[in-house]
Image 1 (cartoon, rainbow, N blue to C red):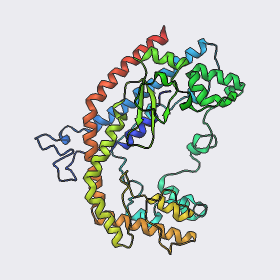
Image 2: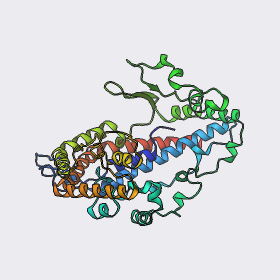
Image 3: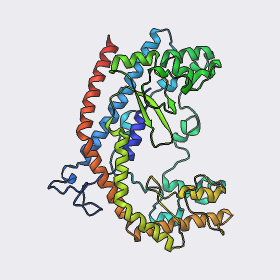
Image 4: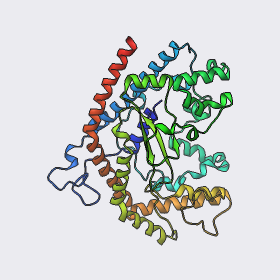
Length: 408
Protein backbone atom coordinates (compact mmCIF):
# COMPACT_ATOMS: atom_id res chain seq x y z
CA UNK A 1 0.00 0.00 0.00
CA UNK A 2 1.08 3.60 -0.54
CA UNK A 3 2.93 4.91 2.50
CA UNK A 4 0.44 7.77 2.80
CA UNK A 5 -2.69 6.34 4.41
CA UNK A 6 -5.94 7.76 5.68
CA UNK A 7 -4.72 7.35 9.23
CA UNK A 8 -1.55 9.25 8.41
CA UNK A 9 -3.57 12.00 6.76
CA UNK A 10 -5.81 12.36 9.79
CA UNK A 11 -2.78 12.59 12.06
CA UNK A 12 -1.19 15.27 9.93
CA UNK A 13 -4.41 17.25 9.66
CA UNK A 14 -4.73 17.20 13.44
CA UNK A 15 -1.12 18.27 13.83
CA UNK A 16 -1.77 21.18 11.44
CA UNK A 17 -5.15 22.03 12.91
CA UNK A 18 -6.48 24.99 14.90
CA UNK A 19 -7.12 28.16 12.97
CA UNK A 20 -8.90 31.37 13.92
CA UNK A 21 -10.20 34.63 12.53
CA UNK A 22 -9.05 36.98 15.24
CA UNK A 23 -6.26 39.48 15.76
CA UNK A 24 -2.66 38.25 15.71
CA UNK A 25 -0.69 37.42 18.83
CA UNK A 26 2.45 38.95 17.37
CA UNK A 27 1.11 42.46 16.91
CA UNK A 28 -0.39 41.91 13.45
CA UNK A 29 -3.90 42.85 12.44
CA UNK A 30 -5.00 39.27 11.77
CA UNK A 31 -3.86 35.80 10.80
CA UNK A 32 -0.76 36.19 8.69
CA UNK A 33 -0.50 39.89 9.47
CA UNK A 34 -1.28 40.99 5.91
CA UNK A 35 -0.47 44.69 5.89
CA UNK A 36 -1.98 45.31 2.50
CA UNK A 37 -5.67 45.86 3.13
CA UNK A 38 -7.01 42.27 3.17
CA UNK A 39 -6.14 39.78 5.90
CA UNK A 40 -6.42 36.03 6.16
CA UNK A 41 -9.24 36.61 8.64
CA UNK A 42 -11.39 38.06 5.88
CA UNK A 43 -11.34 34.81 3.89
CA UNK A 44 -11.06 32.34 6.76
CA UNK A 45 -14.14 30.16 7.21
CA UNK A 46 -13.63 27.26 9.59
CA UNK A 47 -16.68 25.31 8.40
CA UNK A 48 -15.47 25.48 4.80
CA UNK A 49 -11.97 24.34 5.71
CA UNK A 50 -13.26 21.55 7.95
CA UNK A 51 -15.27 20.23 5.02
CA UNK A 52 -12.21 20.54 2.78
CA UNK A 53 -10.17 18.44 5.22
CA UNK A 54 -12.92 15.84 5.61
CA UNK A 55 -13.45 15.55 1.87
CA UNK A 56 -9.72 14.91 1.51
CA UNK A 57 -10.03 12.17 4.15
CA UNK A 58 -13.00 10.62 2.34
CA UNK A 59 -11.33 10.63 -1.06
CA UNK A 60 -8.15 9.16 0.38
CA UNK A 61 -10.15 6.37 2.02
CA UNK A 62 -11.97 5.66 -1.26
CA UNK A 63 -8.65 5.53 -3.07
CA UNK A 64 -7.22 3.11 -0.47
CA UNK A 65 -10.24 0.86 -0.93
CA UNK A 66 -10.33 0.88 -4.71
CA UNK A 67 -6.61 0.16 -4.96
CA UNK A 68 -7.09 -2.92 -2.80
CA UNK A 69 -10.11 -4.04 -4.82
CA UNK A 70 -8.05 -3.93 -7.99
CA UNK A 71 -5.22 -5.79 -6.31
CA UNK A 72 -7.58 -8.41 -4.91
CA UNK A 73 -9.06 -9.06 -8.33
CA UNK A 74 -5.55 -9.37 -9.74
CA UNK A 75 -4.61 -11.86 -7.02
CA UNK A 76 -7.70 -13.97 -7.60
CA UNK A 77 -7.09 -13.96 -11.35
CA UNK A 78 -3.71 -15.48 -10.46
CA UNK A 79 -5.35 -18.17 -8.34
CA UNK A 80 -4.90 -16.64 -4.87
CA UNK A 81 -8.26 -16.73 -3.07
CA UNK A 82 -7.15 -16.59 0.60
CA UNK A 83 -5.80 -13.19 1.59
CA UNK A 84 -3.82 -11.68 4.43
CA UNK A 85 -6.48 -9.70 6.26
CA UNK A 86 -3.86 -7.27 7.51
CA UNK A 87 -4.44 -5.62 4.14
CA UNK A 88 -8.05 -6.55 3.43
CA UNK A 89 -9.80 -6.21 6.80
CA UNK A 90 -12.65 -3.65 6.74
CA UNK A 91 -11.58 -0.14 7.64
CA UNK A 92 -13.59 2.43 9.65
CA UNK A 93 -16.07 4.43 7.64
CA UNK A 94 -14.74 7.94 6.92
CA UNK A 95 -17.71 9.41 8.78
CA UNK A 96 -16.46 7.72 11.95
CA UNK A 97 -13.18 9.64 11.85
CA UNK A 98 -14.35 12.99 10.50
CA UNK A 99 -12.87 16.17 11.88
CA UNK A 100 -15.52 18.31 13.55
CA UNK A 101 -13.40 21.33 14.34
CA UNK A 102 -9.97 22.72 13.58
CA UNK A 103 -9.62 23.92 17.17
CA UNK A 104 -8.80 20.71 19.04
CA UNK A 105 -4.98 20.75 19.11
CA UNK A 106 -2.27 23.14 20.23
CA UNK A 107 1.52 22.54 20.35
CA UNK A 108 1.64 22.95 24.12
CA UNK A 109 -1.09 20.40 24.81
CA UNK A 110 0.21 17.77 27.19
CA UNK A 111 2.76 19.87 29.07
CA UNK A 112 1.08 23.24 29.71
CA UNK A 113 -1.96 22.25 31.74
CA UNK A 114 -4.65 24.34 33.34
CA UNK A 115 -3.70 24.99 36.95
CA UNK A 116 -6.61 22.98 38.37
CA UNK A 117 -5.59 19.85 36.45
CA UNK A 118 -1.93 20.35 37.34
CA UNK A 119 -2.77 20.60 41.05
CA UNK A 120 -4.76 17.37 41.02
CA UNK A 121 -2.97 15.11 38.56
CA UNK A 122 0.35 16.67 37.64
CA UNK A 123 1.31 15.66 34.09
CA UNK A 124 -0.05 12.13 34.56
CA UNK A 125 3.38 10.51 34.29
CA UNK A 126 2.80 8.77 37.63
CA UNK A 127 -0.12 6.85 36.06
CA UNK A 128 2.28 4.64 34.08
CA UNK A 129 4.01 3.32 37.19
CA UNK A 130 2.87 0.20 39.03
CA UNK A 131 2.19 2.21 42.19
CA UNK A 132 0.25 4.79 40.23
CA UNK A 133 -2.00 2.27 38.51
CA UNK A 134 -2.79 0.65 41.85
CA UNK A 135 -3.63 3.96 43.55
CA UNK A 136 -7.07 5.43 44.13
CA UNK A 137 -6.04 8.42 42.00
CA UNK A 138 -5.82 6.25 38.87
CA UNK A 139 -9.58 5.70 38.59
CA UNK A 140 -10.24 9.40 39.08
CA UNK A 141 -7.64 10.26 36.46
CA UNK A 142 -9.09 7.77 33.96
CA UNK A 143 -12.55 9.24 34.50
CA UNK A 144 -11.20 12.76 34.07
CA UNK A 145 -9.60 11.77 30.76
CA UNK A 146 -12.65 9.84 29.60
CA UNK A 147 -10.96 6.43 29.65
CA UNK A 148 -13.24 3.43 30.16
CA UNK A 149 -11.43 0.20 30.98
CA UNK A 150 -14.31 -1.76 29.47
CA UNK A 151 -14.32 0.25 26.27
CA UNK A 152 -14.39 -1.81 23.09
CA UNK A 153 -11.19 -0.12 21.92
CA UNK A 154 -9.35 -1.77 24.78
CA UNK A 155 -11.18 -5.08 24.63
CA UNK A 156 -9.22 -8.29 24.22
CA UNK A 157 -8.29 -8.88 20.63
CA UNK A 158 -8.19 -5.21 19.64
CA UNK A 159 -4.99 -3.71 18.22
CA UNK A 160 -4.61 -1.58 21.36
CA UNK A 161 -4.68 -4.72 23.51
CA UNK A 162 -2.09 -6.45 21.39
CA UNK A 163 -4.46 -8.35 19.11
CA UNK A 164 -5.16 -7.82 15.43
CA UNK A 165 -8.82 -6.82 15.60
CA UNK A 166 -9.68 -9.14 12.68
CA UNK A 167 -9.77 -12.83 11.81
CA UNK A 168 -6.82 -14.11 9.81
CA UNK A 169 -6.96 -17.83 10.58
CA UNK A 170 -7.39 -18.95 6.97
CA UNK A 171 -4.28 -17.16 5.78
CA UNK A 172 -2.23 -18.17 8.80
CA UNK A 173 -3.18 -21.81 8.13
CA UNK A 174 -1.35 -21.67 4.78
CA UNK A 175 2.16 -23.07 4.60
CA UNK A 176 5.04 -20.56 4.89
CA UNK A 177 5.80 -21.07 1.19
CA UNK A 178 2.18 -20.42 0.19
CA UNK A 179 2.10 -17.29 2.33
CA UNK A 180 5.33 -16.08 0.77
CA UNK A 181 4.01 -16.77 -2.73
CA UNK A 182 0.96 -14.67 -1.89
CA UNK A 183 3.16 -11.74 -0.83
CA UNK A 184 5.20 -12.05 -4.04
CA UNK A 185 1.99 -11.87 -6.05
CA UNK A 186 0.66 -9.06 -3.84
CA UNK A 187 3.55 -6.57 -4.01
CA UNK A 188 6.39 -8.22 -5.88
CA UNK A 189 9.51 -10.25 -5.20
CA UNK A 190 11.64 -7.34 -3.98
CA UNK A 191 9.24 -6.23 -1.25
CA UNK A 192 8.32 -9.80 -0.32
CA UNK A 193 11.98 -10.69 0.17
CA UNK A 194 12.43 -7.59 2.32
CA UNK A 195 9.27 -7.92 4.41
CA UNK A 196 8.50 -11.64 4.36
CA UNK A 197 11.70 -13.46 3.43
CA UNK A 198 11.82 -14.95 6.92
CA UNK A 199 8.98 -17.27 5.86
CA UNK A 200 11.33 -19.20 3.60
CA UNK A 201 14.59 -18.46 5.37
CA UNK A 202 15.72 -15.73 2.99
CA UNK A 203 15.47 -12.58 5.05
CA UNK A 204 17.69 -9.84 3.66
CA UNK A 205 18.54 -6.18 4.03
CA UNK A 206 16.65 -4.09 1.45
CA UNK A 207 19.47 -1.58 0.93
CA UNK A 208 21.76 -4.41 -0.17
CA UNK A 209 19.20 -5.75 -2.64
CA UNK A 210 18.09 -2.44 -4.18
CA UNK A 211 18.68 -2.24 -7.91
CA UNK A 212 20.97 0.76 -7.81
CA UNK A 213 21.30 0.74 -11.57
CA UNK A 214 17.81 2.21 -11.90
CA UNK A 215 18.26 4.81 -9.19
CA UNK A 216 19.59 8.13 -10.47
CA UNK A 217 20.77 10.12 -7.48
CA UNK A 218 23.95 11.92 -6.51
CA UNK A 219 24.33 10.13 -3.19
CA UNK A 220 22.93 6.75 -2.21
CA UNK A 221 20.41 7.10 0.66
CA UNK A 222 20.76 5.07 3.83
CA UNK A 223 17.63 3.14 2.84
CA UNK A 224 16.00 2.55 -0.54
CA UNK A 225 12.52 1.09 -0.55
CA UNK A 226 12.24 -1.98 -2.80
CA UNK A 227 10.42 -1.26 -6.04
CA UNK A 228 6.79 -2.48 -6.11
CA UNK A 229 5.91 -5.42 -8.33
CA UNK A 230 3.17 -8.02 -8.61
CA UNK A 231 -0.44 -6.92 -8.38
CA UNK A 232 0.55 -3.71 -6.67
CA UNK A 233 2.55 -2.70 -9.71
CA UNK A 234 -0.31 -3.67 -12.02
CA UNK A 235 -2.62 -1.42 -10.00
CA UNK A 236 -0.14 1.46 -10.09
CA UNK A 237 0.35 1.16 -13.84
CA UNK A 238 -3.42 1.07 -14.38
CA UNK A 239 -4.29 4.10 -12.24
CA UNK A 240 -1.28 6.39 -12.12
CA UNK A 241 1.24 8.02 -14.41
CA UNK A 242 4.18 6.11 -12.99
CA UNK A 243 6.52 5.63 -10.08
CA UNK A 244 8.89 8.25 -8.71
CA UNK A 245 11.65 7.57 -6.20
CA UNK A 246 11.60 10.41 -3.68
CA UNK A 247 14.42 10.96 -1.20
CA UNK A 248 13.51 12.16 2.28
CA UNK A 249 16.32 13.64 4.35
CA UNK A 250 19.79 13.86 2.92
CA UNK A 251 22.29 16.71 3.03
CA UNK A 252 22.64 18.14 6.50
CA UNK A 253 20.58 15.36 8.09
CA UNK A 254 21.73 12.23 9.87
CA UNK A 255 19.52 9.81 7.90
CA UNK A 256 18.07 9.69 4.42
CA UNK A 257 15.64 7.30 2.78
CA UNK A 258 14.12 6.91 -0.67
CA UNK A 259 10.52 5.80 -1.16
CA UNK A 260 8.43 5.08 -4.23
CA UNK A 261 5.55 7.52 -4.77
CA UNK A 262 2.79 7.17 -7.30
CA UNK A 263 -0.31 8.96 -6.05
CA UNK A 264 -0.72 12.68 -6.69
CA UNK A 265 0.79 14.42 -3.67
CA UNK A 266 -1.80 15.43 -1.10
CA UNK A 267 -1.41 19.13 -0.19
CA UNK A 268 -2.10 18.41 3.49
CA UNK A 269 0.86 15.99 3.50
CA UNK A 270 3.45 18.51 2.36
CA UNK A 271 6.12 17.98 5.01
CA UNK A 272 8.17 20.93 3.80
CA UNK A 273 5.15 23.19 4.32
CA UNK A 274 4.63 21.69 7.76
CA UNK A 275 8.22 22.51 8.67
CA UNK A 276 7.68 26.10 7.52
CA UNK A 277 4.53 26.35 9.61
CA UNK A 278 6.45 25.16 12.65
CA UNK A 279 9.23 27.64 11.98
CA UNK A 280 6.83 30.58 11.70
CA UNK A 281 5.04 29.53 14.88
CA UNK A 282 8.32 29.37 16.78
CA UNK A 283 9.32 32.79 15.47
CA UNK A 284 6.06 34.25 16.76
CA UNK A 285 6.50 32.88 20.28
CA UNK A 286 10.28 33.19 20.68
CA UNK A 287 9.98 35.99 23.24
CA UNK A 288 7.26 34.20 25.16
CA UNK A 289 9.37 31.03 25.33
CA UNK A 290 12.19 32.99 26.94
CA UNK A 291 9.82 34.56 29.45
CA UNK A 292 8.46 31.15 30.48
CA UNK A 293 11.93 29.68 30.95
CA UNK A 294 12.98 32.73 33.01
CA UNK A 295 9.88 32.34 35.18
CA UNK A 296 10.76 28.72 35.92
CA UNK A 297 14.32 29.72 36.80
CA UNK A 298 12.99 32.32 39.24
CA UNK A 299 11.01 29.53 40.91
CA UNK A 300 14.15 27.50 41.45
CA UNK A 301 13.90 25.46 38.25
CA UNK A 302 16.80 26.66 36.04
CA UNK A 303 18.12 24.99 32.93
CA UNK A 304 14.94 24.46 30.94
CA UNK A 305 14.94 25.10 27.18
CA UNK A 306 12.41 24.50 24.44
CA UNK A 307 13.13 21.66 22.02
CA UNK A 308 12.81 21.69 18.23
CA UNK A 309 9.11 20.88 18.49
CA UNK A 310 8.43 23.95 20.62
CA UNK A 311 7.89 21.89 23.77
CA UNK A 312 9.58 21.52 27.11
CA UNK A 313 11.06 17.98 27.41
CA UNK A 314 9.13 17.29 30.59
CA UNK A 315 8.21 13.70 29.76
CA UNK A 316 11.89 12.74 29.48
CA UNK A 317 12.61 14.53 32.75
CA UNK A 318 9.87 12.66 34.59
CA UNK A 319 10.84 9.36 32.95
CA UNK A 320 14.24 9.73 34.57
CA UNK A 321 12.60 10.69 37.88
CA UNK A 322 10.42 7.57 38.00
CA UNK A 323 12.77 5.03 36.43
CA UNK A 324 16.21 6.34 37.27
CA UNK A 325 17.17 5.93 33.61
CA UNK A 326 18.04 8.86 31.34
CA UNK A 327 16.24 8.49 28.00
CA UNK A 328 17.00 11.68 26.07
CA UNK A 329 18.93 13.98 28.36
CA UNK A 330 17.94 17.34 26.86
CA UNK A 331 16.52 18.59 30.14
CA UNK A 332 17.94 19.89 33.42
CA UNK A 333 19.51 17.46 35.82
CA UNK A 334 17.26 16.22 38.57
CA UNK A 335 18.01 17.92 41.89
CA UNK A 336 20.33 16.08 44.24
CA UNK A 337 17.51 15.72 46.75
CA UNK A 338 14.96 14.36 44.22
CA UNK A 339 12.60 11.99 46.06
CA UNK A 340 13.11 8.24 45.82
CA UNK A 341 9.69 7.03 47.00
CA UNK A 342 6.50 7.03 44.92
CA UNK A 343 4.59 9.55 47.05
CA UNK A 344 7.53 11.93 46.98
CA UNK A 345 7.88 11.61 43.21
CA UNK A 346 4.16 12.28 42.73
CA UNK A 347 4.38 15.43 44.85
CA UNK A 348 7.47 16.52 42.89
CA UNK A 349 5.65 16.01 39.58
CA UNK A 350 2.57 17.94 40.73
CA UNK A 351 4.68 20.85 41.99
CA UNK A 352 6.46 21.05 38.64
CA UNK A 353 3.16 20.95 36.74
CA UNK A 354 1.77 23.77 38.88
CA UNK A 355 4.88 25.92 38.36
CA UNK A 356 4.71 25.42 34.58
CA UNK A 357 0.97 26.22 34.52
CA UNK A 358 1.36 29.35 36.63
CA UNK A 359 4.35 30.56 34.62
CA UNK A 360 2.38 29.94 31.43
CA UNK A 361 -0.33 32.28 32.69
CA UNK A 362 1.82 34.88 34.46
CA UNK A 363 4.14 35.43 31.49
CA UNK A 364 1.36 35.42 28.91
CA UNK A 365 2.90 32.40 27.17
CA UNK A 366 -0.36 30.45 27.05
CA UNK A 367 -2.28 33.27 25.40
CA UNK A 368 0.55 34.18 23.01
CA UNK A 369 1.17 30.58 21.92
CA UNK A 370 -2.55 29.95 21.49
CA UNK A 371 -2.99 32.93 19.21
CA UNK A 372 0.27 32.39 17.31
CA UNK A 373 -0.69 28.81 16.52
CA UNK A 374 -4.15 29.80 15.30
CA UNK A 375 -2.78 32.59 13.14
CA UNK A 376 -0.09 30.38 11.62
CA UNK A 377 -2.52 27.60 10.79
CA UNK A 378 -4.97 30.06 9.25
CA UNK A 379 -2.21 31.17 6.90
CA UNK A 380 -1.39 27.56 6.08
CA UNK A 381 -4.87 26.28 5.33
CA UNK A 382 -5.74 29.28 3.22
CA UNK A 383 -2.50 28.91 1.28
CA UNK A 384 -3.31 25.32 0.24
CA UNK A 385 -7.04 25.69 -0.32
CA UNK A 386 -6.97 26.12 -4.11
CA UNK A 387 -4.36 23.38 -4.49
CA UNK A 388 -6.40 21.02 -2.33
CA UNK A 389 -9.57 21.47 -4.38
CA UNK A 390 -7.58 20.79 -7.55
CA UNK A 391 -6.15 17.62 -5.94
CA UNK A 392 -9.65 16.48 -5.01
CA UNK A 393 -10.84 16.88 -8.60
CA UNK A 394 -7.83 14.87 -9.81
CA UNK A 395 -8.57 12.06 -7.35
CA UNK A 396 -12.21 11.94 -8.39
CA UNK A 397 -11.03 11.37 -11.95
CA UNK A 398 -8.78 8.51 -10.82
CA UNK A 399 -11.64 6.97 -8.86
CA UNK A 400 -13.91 7.13 -11.88
CA UNK A 401 -11.28 5.38 -14.01
CA UNK A 402 -10.79 2.74 -11.30
CA UNK A 403 -14.51 2.03 -11.28
CA UNK A 404 -14.46 1.56 -15.05
CA UNK A 405 -11.64 -0.97 -14.63
CA UNK A 406 -13.57 -2.86 -11.99
CA UNK A 407 -16.66 -3.00 -14.17
CA UNK A 408 -14.79 -4.14 -17.28
